Image 1 (cartoon, one colour):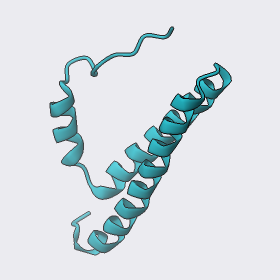
Image 2 (image 1 turned 90 degrees about the vertical axis):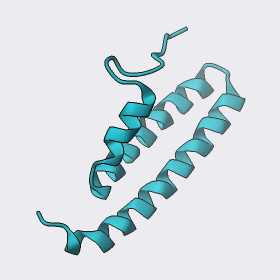
Image 3 (image 1 turned 90 degrees about the horizontal axis):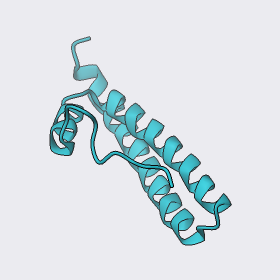
Image 4 (image 1 turned 60 degrees about the vertical axis):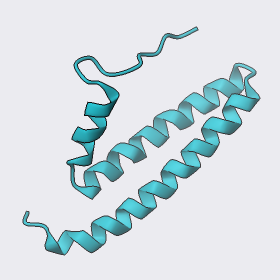
Length: 85
């Protein structure tokens, strides 16, 4: 079984979250969009390895992340005119 890290080297999950939250909405949107793509790949791998329940739950998380991407995109479009580039 593949090993997964609990956090990124040099960051606690709380600190990483705090740093990401400092980014503009478009950047956060892109991070979450990329994350959803990576999780989707993992979900497909889980299905291929005979883990259908894990596949279903990770796929549900992917759907929720994509909804967050849509909302962040709307937030970015609203806030963009007010940001100094």
